[in-house]
Length: 185
Image 1 (cartoon, rainbow, N blue to C red):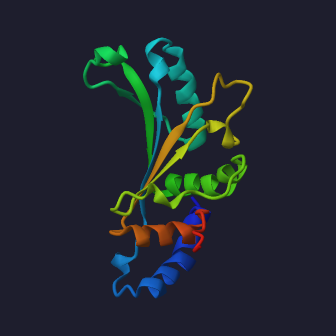
Image 2: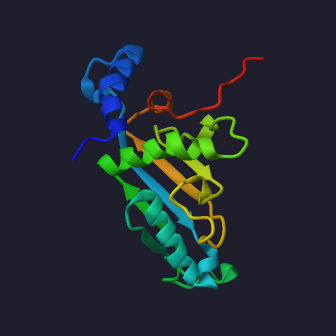
C-alpha cells in the first residue's frame, strides 16, 4: 500500500522545517501526529434511536472507519438520560487513515465552509493538542445532502507528540492547516 500524500510531505518537508525552526537536537523531539479523534454528540438519540444509525453511517463514510457508540455512564434525570443509553459516537484514527483524513479535512472540507476566514488558533489545550469544532457535516463531499436528515456538528481532536502549543501550531501550519493571522494593531 502506498503511503499517504500528507505523510510523505511530513517526512520530506515538515521534519526539516521544524528542525530548523526550533533547533531540535534529536529526531524524537520533532512533533508528529499521534491520533485524530472525531466525535459527534447525539442528544436527540434518546427520543429517536434511528438517528444513531444515520449518524453512524455518515461518520463511517467521512472517516472510513466504523464509529464506536458511546453510552451514558450514569443516569441523569434532568436530561432524561438513563445509564447505558447511546449519547454519541466517536472514531479514533491512527497511522495511514489519520493522514488521509487530515489531508481531506485541510484540502477539501475546510475550503467548503461558508464565509471561511481561517481557523481560530485558540483551540490548543496547553499540551500540544488541538480541538476543532465543525457546525455541520455537509462540508465533507462524502455526505449526500438529500439522504441526510439534519446538520450535525462534530468535534475533531488532533493529538500530537508536541509538548508545547507553539510546536503543535507550527506542525499543523506546516501540514497546511489554515489558521487565522493575528493583526498587530
